[in-house]
Picture 1 (cartoon, rainbow, N blue to C red):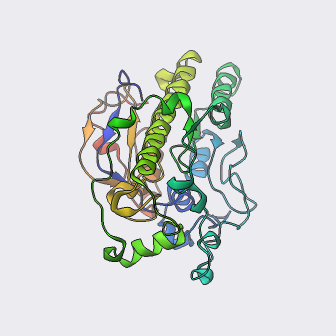
Picture 2: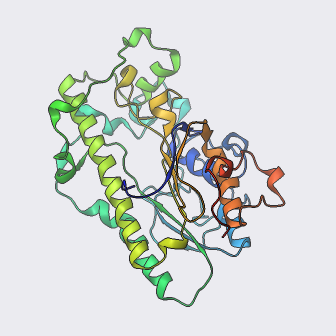
Picture 3: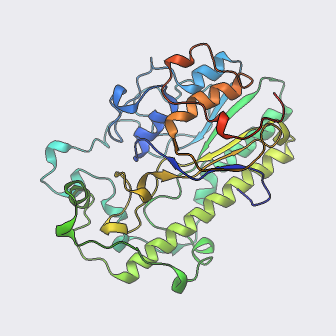
Length: 340
């Protein structure tokens, strides 16, 4: 978000499942991901499970999805009326981690092996990222503005970055000075790692070849560039929102599905509950409703569904709120200026 945007920033927000598909399922449904078997990237969200998109449609909202969501199985909507793009991953179950094959080649049990920093492309010229979900979302905003559908809308714009493989267009790579990139603060010898960390190194192929400090610094530089790319994309969507004259009445939430270890403790990617992997950004921009500020209390993604439902219900908990895991974040958002 650009600095001039008045947003509430949650400084201690965490994901409940630091992996893409379990995050997506956790974000959408009212219960813990483990209760619907969301353990890996091949997890199917049963079509009969209600999501926040279903709840918002009941509340009279138009629901739109653009970009990555990791829905496996035949249901690729899960309550959304419109999907502007396909997913970037297959909808079948080929991302099953294959736990029975754990002792065999790491490539059998992880899709991250080819993204390991020692094999990553540092920088290149490409415009394909921009076209994936941001542009369809911006076009849809103008379609909403000039259309006859007067319902309030909920649009999810899901960007793939920042994510491995650690590659980014040159314009974002060049925003960062290589000499200024900090190296990991915590380094632990492989033999001294905990069992889960050693397992992650195995399944992600981190022990297949050594990685140099130069490669670590390059991977971190590319990741920082990816963060800048996402920031620009969010700014572009907000500009379209303003140009379509929809921004005054639109609440904007910015969040991520997981973090990235970036070499800390000798680990990369996510899939652990160390701070870099499970802590996420969470911002809420609603200046017409709440006084912006900083929230120090710890919250998690499990709190988002009840929050969305209260926002859709004029700040009042829905009648079925007792059925929901998590708690609304509205009490953390500061004094309420006016109701919707």
